[in-house]
Length: 174
Image (cartoon, rainbow, N blue to C red; front, side, top):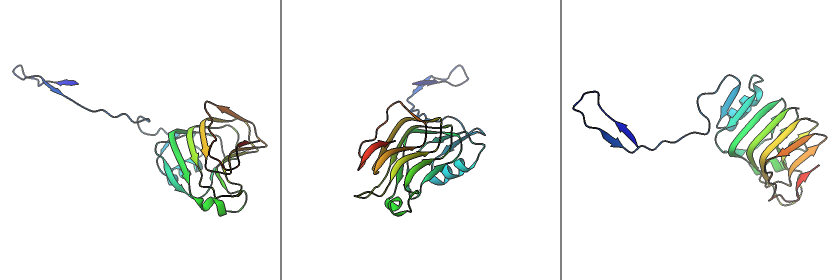
């Protein structure tokens, strides 16, 4: 409850009920932080080497291609989801990941990756880390794929809660 009063001495004091909603990200983006709400925003932020942190502030759905992380960056999911279409199931081998990490010093936090895998093996992974070091996956959920997370020739640290249930063949493949 906020109290509002006028500047003159004869004014009455009035009580107002106000609802305040706080956003998980405050203020505008700084030059090295991108606040993204769409897949297009995410692609632009990943392509900009000046961006060191990407904050995903909405669920993003209908993604039909792999998100490729090929440089050091921190991606904060802020509890949101990346939802992929079944189109990934028919792409050529090596392009059937939700997120493909190809760089050292990547951190992905507080994010759900939801694939739309078909019945039978297609080689679809929620997250694949390939030939990279110092990668941190923190509070990650990867579901709906053949395998949730694939660590291939890489050093990956899983922190927080990692959930890989709901995949057809397995959770984490190393």
